[in-house]
Length: 421
Image (cartoon, rainbow, N blue to C red; front, top):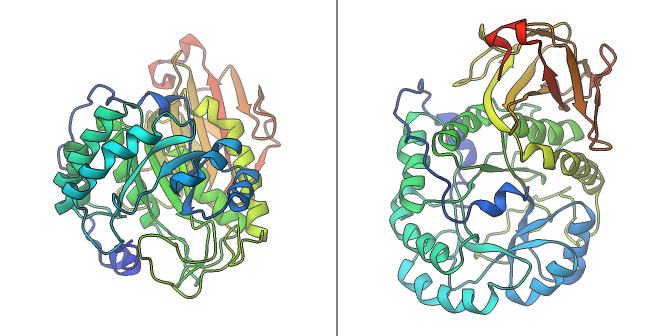
C-alpha cells in the first residue's frame, strides 16, 4: 500500500527502457502451483467483517477474498469463496517492513489449525514490498510451501515498468520467493478521462517474467474511485479485465470492493472512496451490477482460458511503450474497422490456435473483422453468455467499448507455418 499512495508519482516519473535484460530460463512448475491450473481467481481485494458482506461478494461473482480472518472461513466456504487467511501477527501494517522472525513463529500454528479448511486458498504475507524485503519474505514463502503445499503465500507487488522493474524487482522476487503466482496492481483510469499507457507497459513486463518462469500472473484492477482515479465505467472495467485476459492473466483482483478504508493493516482513510461495488455502508451500487455481469462473462471463459498458453500479444493502432505491433507472423495482420485493438495469441493443450481481440476504444463499439495472415478454414468464438464454442458470426459481431472476444482459428495444413500457433 505504501507504493499505492505514490501511484501517480511512480506512473509519471518511471524511466522507460527497451527490454534488454536477461530473464531466467523457464523453470519447472513451482511446488504448489497445481491448484491454479484449475482455479481462476476473481478476487475482492478487500477485507470482510461479517457474513452478509461475503454473501454480497459471492452474489457478484467473486470467488476469492484477499483478507479473511479465520473466524469467517466457514462463511466463505458456505458461499463458495476461497480465502486468503489474514493474521495481523503475520502481515505487518502497510507502512512496516515484513518481519520474518515474527511471521515464522506464527505461521506453523496458523497453518496447522486452518490448513484443512475447505475455504483456505493461502496466507497473506505482504502487500507491495520493496525488493529489500524479498529475502525475509522468501523464508516465509518457503515455510508455507513446506507446511502447506498448494497454498498461496500471498504477496502482491507494486506497479512499475522498465528494465530495472523486470530484472531487479519482479525477477528478483521470483528468485527469492519462488511464488506459485505473480500478483501486482495497476490503476490506469484518471479523472481527466485518460487511460494510462503504463497499464499495458506494466502488464507487458510482468508477462515477460511470467512466461520466462512459467508462472501464471494475476493482476488487480480498479473498481473504486479514490484520489484522482475516476469512477470506473462499464467500458473501463471491460478494458482492464479483457485486456489482462489478452495478455494471459490467470486471475483478476478488484480494488476496492467496498467504498471504505481497509479495517486491517492500519490503513488510512483516503477520504474519497466511492462507487465501489459496495458503498460505505455495504449497500450495492451500480458498479456491483456491472461487475457481476463482467464476472459472469469471465467465469464462462475461465475453463477454456485455463487451458490456454499465451504465445504473443500485440496492439493494432496506437502501440504503448514496451509493447509491439503486428509482425509478419502475427495471426491477425490488421482490422477492417475500428481505431485500436489488443490481440492476444494462444495455443491450447492440443496445439490449436486461439486469439483474443479487445476493442481499446472506450467511447465507441467496433466490428470485429480481422484480416488474418492466411484465410482460416473455420473460425469459432467462445460465447461469454453461454460458455459454448460456436461459429463466429462474421461480419456481424461487434465489440462494445473495452469488450473482448475469444476466438478459435483453424487453418488449412497448406496455409503455411506462419499460420500455426
